[in-house]
Length: 212
Image: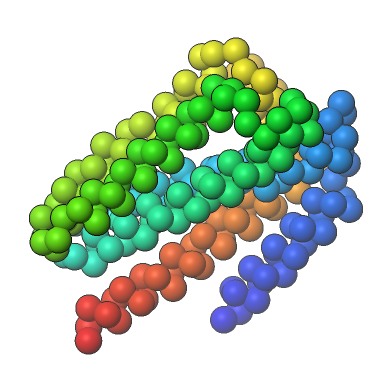
């Protein structure tokens, strides 16, 4: 219970810090504050997809349906965080590029990622037999995650993009003010903690369901 209270305080500090403590980025103005939400959401989405794959591997090793359900939940959480990252990115695009959607390489790669994981749930809904569904879904989740690093980190950097430079550039230099970086790290930890809290609740629900 204590860590949940601390998480609530942490996220409150994150929100206050993102608007009152961190300065706006040079050349971008107040819209730059969206970075404290957009980037952590994207990174936590990658974490959720990774955990989905790990649970899929555990299912294939143990045949315990609990791990398949955890893999499904994390894939769903990954989609939610990806959608939130896409929405916040679209608002940034609107105020900097003039349109919510420009088919920029980063936007396109995220769209493809959503299609890949959307297909995961189509597969699950198309197979009625529980064990076969779990087996096929687990294999798909493993293959799907292989695309994540390419679509999120690699492919967008291979093409010219309107998207701002990463937080740390290829030469290892920090691309933001020290106070912005502090708030960014607070935000990243906060969203990670929020994800863990939701996942922990889901794990307990799944476990209780299988013990009934």
